[in-house]
Image 1 (cartoon, rainbow, N blue to C red):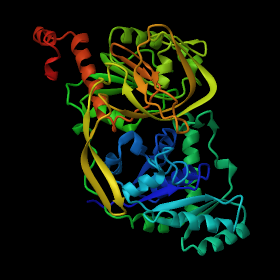
Image 2: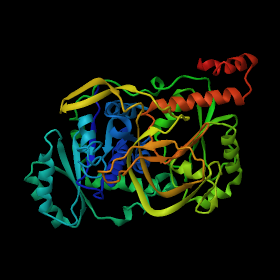
Image 3: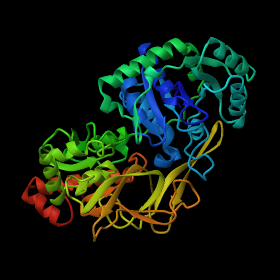
Image 4: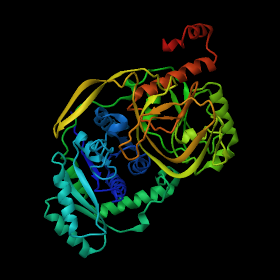
Length: 512
């Protein structure tokens, strides 16, 4: 068991100010000299980028769908201890407090994660359209789920001192304390576009200025001592920390490239940690600026981002496009998710891309959004069909009870991989495409699928798909990628005759 002061920042609905309050709170607490660990409920990549600016350490996600319930506490503990132990963890929620995967009784909601981590909740409420009615709203949230502790309220978009006093009086009747009140301030709004906030990595110094201003605002408007007192009320966490070195094989050092820069800002922190834990040298490559892959590169991970915003600039960097194309065609392991998929197409909105895939991509007005359950459509770099797995499954049976038991996940002969889609582009494939995943139908749920959908493409050591997968939740995928990179290095870097004989028998010598 371990003591970690922590608090969940939640709201009645989206758009209430969770990100403003959570990011500002992280910055304000750091300005006090505390080491702060920032976390985000759900699959979102963008908010953790602002958390990283505020805390000076990686922003991280907690998502029972992507990672499994049993990994939420270990991943929280990992994030709070790496690179150094944190004094407090601030967990920003998603959507409304009880809103999760549709049709699954709030699974993967903020409330679900708060229960799993036994964390007190601070409710952020936009009061711009009401006054005394806020008391009724807070009363409802405080009493709806007896397993949750609504430990305080932070009022957002208060109009005046009179307005604030009226709301405070109404909320006082609920017994839930008001810990702060923020006035309307349009100057602190973060710019948005078609998939939400503009990522912090794209805004550079402007993002730093915004976060600093939010920290100052929260320090003035919120009782930080009261917030810390709430966080310190959180009970001890069960023992057990996620350790990437226990999830992947340890291999001789080879180099793998990971796409970064303004066009490729979506990558979970644990992805790099898994690659590094396997002994790989992880080298960031910016497809907007770098003209070559790193020397002796043995693998490439192309994550998500906004290539549609930078299509002309990506296309103009013909040297890197050609280098990626040559490497992929030579059999170097390449994993591409969403933005990476677009980069591997012939063209994106008419701009030439790498041409690795016989496919064309374009922006549309339609948003594709939702959790997915996928199975391998066939043998590929990342997955083999026809596998059953046994994993620990944790069930929360009360506010203080978590029961873990082994459970064999049997879905016919196939292994289920959980992920999410989030894009406004469409890819049209040429003939002969071999799909990467088969998405299971979920016709009764919004953002679901009416029928099985074959998605993505595989070709030898290439795996490209719209599906975002959190490798901490599916470490076997990371293990397959790093093993393939080591095998490729053994071939591409001209192994010794003894190694060549071993390769002929079925693998590089360090993989036997």
